[in-house]
Every structure is written in C-alpha cells, then in structure tokens.
Image 1 (tube, one colour):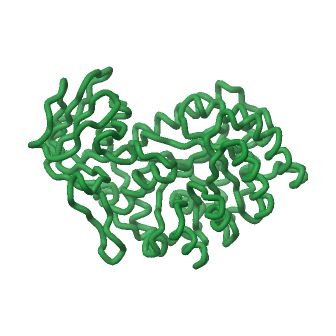
Image 2 (tube, helix red, strand yellow):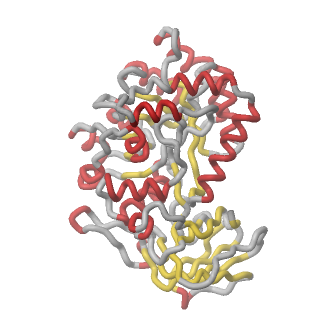
Image 3 (cartoon, rainbow, N blue to C red):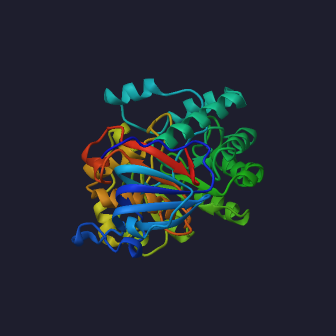
Length: 407
C-alpha cells in the first residue's frame, strides 16, 4: 500500500476510486471469484483484484476491473488498499442514558448475567432529558460510522412507558431509518406482566408505530413467554410493523420457532439452539443474527455459527451495542470475534456483517457494491478483508463513504 487516502469533503458529481488491491462486491457475477471453505459452502464475496469503483451521486455505477472503469469527475488513488461494502449493523440499542460499568466489573469477577441490569438503564433513561439522549445516540452513530458502519438499526426498550418509548423512537428516527419498537424488552419492576403486555400491544404500540419500521420482543424466560410474544406480534403486525425477535440468548426457548412462524426478518442471539431451531431457520427466510460481542462481554457460550452455516441458514453479524452487555459499536471487533470464537472464516464473517446484515433488514440497496446499490464503501488500511481478523484490534478503517459522500 502506498500514499494517503484523503476523500474530498463536500464532493459532488461522479467519483472514481482507483488503486484498489481487493474489492469485495458481494456480487459474484462482478468478480467471478468466490472464497470460502468448500465443505461449508462457498462464500459469494465477488472479489475483484486490481479494481476500481465509481460513484455517481449516491449510487454505484461501476464496480469491477480497473481497466474497464469509466472516467469520473474526481479520482482518488487508494494505493493498494482493500474496499468493502459499508457494514450493516442490524441490532443495536442506542437510546439510553448512563452506563453499567459497575455491573460489568462484577460480572468479570464471577457474577452471572441475568438481564436484571436492564432496569438500571431504564431508570437512567427515563430521568434523562431529550437532548442528553439525542446527543448520546448521535455520538454512538458517529462512532460506528468511523468504524465503517454505514447502516445501523436502533431499538427502543429503555423507556417502558408509553411516552418514554415514543420519545426513544422519535429520537432514533432522527438518525436512522431502521427503527425498532422494543417495548417488550422486560416487564417494568412492580408491574403485572399481563397488564404490561396489554399496554405494549395497545396504547404503547399506537404511540410508537408512527416512528418504527420493526417490532421486537425479548422472548426469554424471565422476560416474555410464547403467548405474550404472539399477542404483541399479532397487534404489531396489524399496525404495519415487521417482526424481528430476541431469541434463545439465555437458554433454549420458543423464540426462534415463533420468529419463523411470523416470517420475522431475523432471530437475534441464537446462542442456545435446538436441532429443530436450526432446521427451522435453514428452511425459512428468517436470518440468524449472531452477536458475539454480547457473549464476550458476559462470558457466555458463543453461538454455533458452523452448525447454522452447514444447515444452510443465512447468518448476519451485529454489535448488539448497549450499555450493559455489549458496549461496542465496532463491527470490525465483531468480525474478529466471529472468526476466532464462532469459527467462521474471514470471508463468512465479512459477508455476514455486510450482505447478511442487509438481509436481516430486508434491504437490497446496501451490503453490496454493484451497479444500482447505494454508494456505501469502507476502505481498509490493508490489502485484503482478511486483515480484519488477521490483525485484530488494529485501526484498519482508512476511509468511509456513505451514500457517495465521505464520512
């Protein structure tokens, strides 16, 4: 690699990125080269060597060999660096106040994770004014963008009253179009569970639906059972929201089967899966979104990605950014964890963090670099995507473009 990567701020018109050692397109027809372990299925990264990438406005108009690239108004020489689609983080909890560093310290000293700390964040979030919540979300979104995340999902779930859930989603919607109503995160302390479910599926849903695209339920022992989950999903689907579920994080349960039953976009965590869960995911359009940073931060068992991939399930990677169990916005960190702890190949992990995330959000305009896709690109200060896992913890992100504009 040579030279410096300096995107011009405020650029307009067309732009050609040259000097790309390796271009990950996630479109096999572009590069004609797939990578991966044949025993686990070929990963369609669509790699192109000695490549160029051309944007016109906010869209990709060319992604392929350098010698066939059209001219553009501006040109940036990347000096032998690798280029990937922008990362797609399809699971994050960004609207909150306070932190839970003391809880983390206790957990690292041997205390088990039970999800009870959510109530601590709920109290802090309810007490925080709008500008504090807004500033925190903006800080986390900007932090994620600097690390290559060009699309991020954001859930409510730390308000748990009608006005606090609605304001959480209203604030989230200012910074991302991928907003999720998670009023069913936990039952607030001192509240009757059945009465709370009625609130979630009634006035809370009515207040939150205008600001949300998705609905989520924490379907776990100690949170919401199968009947409660179905009641909430039935009401949310009638209101026009599409399901995604927290499923099988703390132990085996009905979450994955309910996710598939309702045609959910994704079942998230998937740490404790039965054979029937794996078969259900493999035979459906529901993505298994794995969140290895949560396991890292709670010293919990990791999801069995190899079993899911071998069965033919679609796998995504996301951060699960939240103040209690995964306080990170770094997809590169999650990729390194997935390779080391989930036994994914670097190609599988990169695909899961880009195209897999896009599938978990049911988007075909992101997570790939092909003609017509949104011009979201990450430049690595490395010659190959493999370096994200090969040299973990290093500052690999040299530049980011989102919708054709330098970040």
